[in-house]
Image (tube, rainbow, N blue to C red):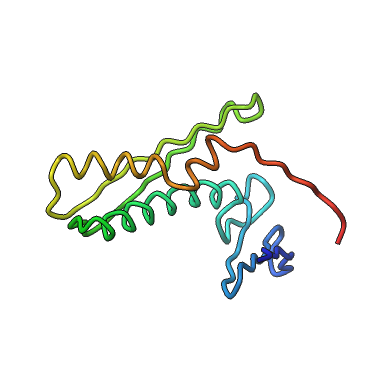
Length: 132
């Protein structure tokens, strides 16, 4: 599958992102020359982590017949040292349902092993940039 990002000239820095059958908008905030008409690329990166944690916990709960009702994952970003090679994310999780403390702890552990969490924290990403 290819992800296609193409400039949307209706905005100063606005771009359309096509992922399969889905389209979303990315932009930059006004202080970076955009109009904040969509999330930034950093927002999407952070959202991938939050989304994967939530989906992984739900998948696990369904597989193990755990009475998980709702999941909320909030990501807080500290990018103050990004240029020095450190990008810090804090994932705060809230769940609801008739859950024992052991089940809650297991869900937290599962969230820490979600595929995107592992990809961001354990894998070396190699990127090749070429002309189309």
